[in-house]
Image 1 (cartoon, rainbow, N blue to C red):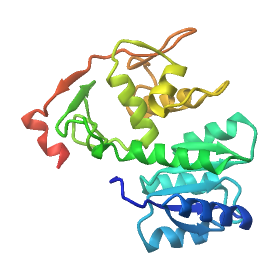
Image 2: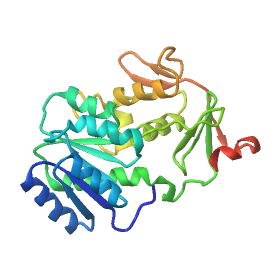
Image 3: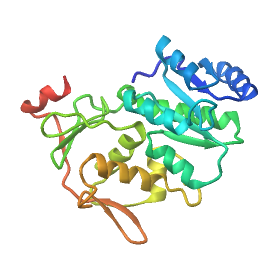
Image 4: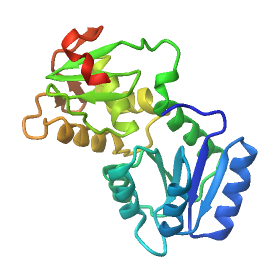
Length: 250
């Protein structure tokens, strides 16, 4: 995803006042904004033009926000930030499980939402970031990860679909193989903010990476360290792409 000058944000919330408030505030922060009161109108917005990020309330009148998030993630890489008035940590964990990139609890300060939006957009547009070598590759356990395109490809050329949050966490491990990384360190590396008390998002994302990379049953790639955090325990090679693998990035 390229970082555009005025990113187009879709706000999906059934509360008219919240939609109006966020619409005005985001426009004042140089975002283009579309507003939707339910999943059906959100689908129309998504079909009518490019959307760079979705701000999605969990409580929608026609379908569950979690179900809509799951459906959208199955067919699109558009970043998703969940808004939830629910206090239980499990609801936020489920949101990450179904593919959200971040979440924010209600009530919230619109300035914090803008900061989250910009952070997620920066992560998903890493191909434009200075200092990222266009041809840099990380090879591990038969997979190849390319930071410039934010793609992970298996040994047989099949792309592994990762969300922005999953890719960021994987890169944190690939850049620090063999090191013990605490949950707080991983949150700070990937999200640039301190972990909230009992924040389980790292555990959820590691679980998803294990499943997608075929490590769920063996735990040989991502090792859990008692009273510590996680360790990426397989060998990582870096450098230019091998000639036989060039076709994977075409």
